[in-house]
Image (cartoon, rainbow, N blue to C red; front, side, top):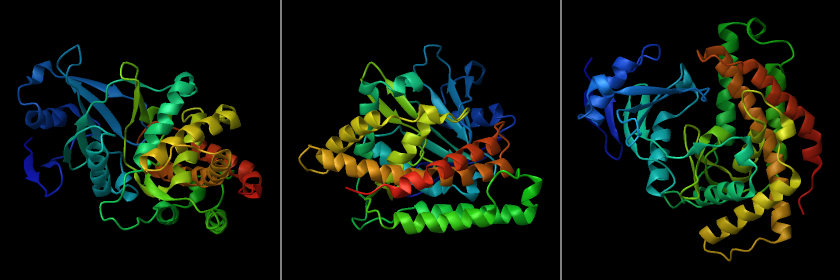
Length: 357
């Protein structure tokens, strides 16, 4: 297998080849011929990371001490329907340029290769340690302060993305009736469309700044480096400009986990307020303001975050329906969708009733 080399202006090197997700080693070796020509194929080892539920991720190395590791991510089947891969490459480079992300080595037809981020993937225990969740708040604030290249205000991606998800669910319904692959306890397409409009009307009254967001800050997308006392966020497939309160609310939702969603793990009010205080102090400092967060500012952001957390449940519920239809990854996407929609409906009236101070 040979790969044609292509360089795009302002983009990383692109290799015109694909990696077989069912038998990736031969394709990975071709990639490494370009990226690590001194590595002997017989010495190259592959470690498969199993946490992801969208793509296949491998770490490639020759040194057992892991002195140099190249990560290869093979995109999941049909994910190009709802992930803008060109946007992902662009955002990847923006994060790296601002010291917030790893180096992107190359792209290929169905994936990317990039730098390994040293540290440990967060778990539930680490996530709740004040010293660590404050680091997460500070890092998110740093990313949120990155300004658009154009200098003109960016448009939030939220409603465009949800509209795309809804259209894809409709398309999937036309390909095969929903009752053939969706259980009856999930909301119908008509209910999903109606709830989208309800959310849009309600959240239109909430003024949340448009900032550069990660948009998918689940626990496994946060790497903690104890030696450096730092955290880094990984995986930028969904990163884009969006509402500030959405990114934070989405992260709080992720405290409940992915494989076995448990909303008893949702952060307490005290934890959220402490997190939001650290965030606001850092964000204001990054924006050249006095780094002091008043109780009123924290309370206001708390209410905004609660309200936007609802649409996070909704968007990932829609995403899970699409994954259930198209993904080859062994994961119960329908159970995940049901958990997200159920919690949305459970909290909707409570959060809609909250008033901004």
